[in-house]
Image 1: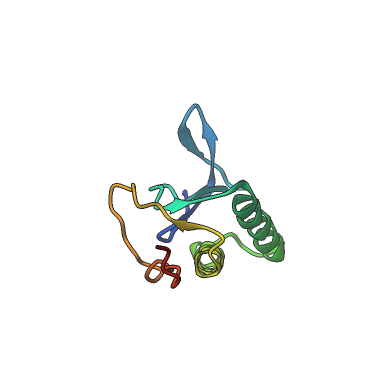
Image 2: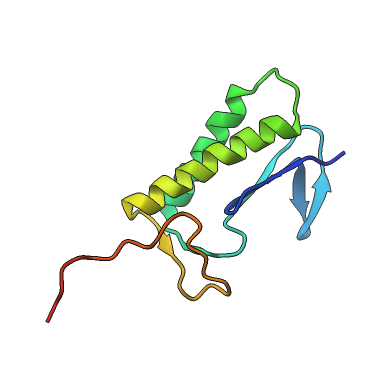
Length: 114
């Protein structure tokens, strides 16, 4: 049975991607970061999400692969994404089909330039 964890910006599946299709797997996970392109990403932020994902997966080594454990990993990663947004490391994609400030209002530079 394929398990999954879905948060606003992180989706994790017990599957591998083959020919643009998810194929269930009992021992491999696939992560989809911001599938709706709601955020503007840079390479460093994406690398940090993957590194944290690997760290969290490693921390569950030897435990049963359950939907609950996947949700815990997904939630931790969602918090990481929120911290990136709050630090200005990533930003909202204002050209997204559905702009949703689910992680707080965008930061606005208080300086007024004339």
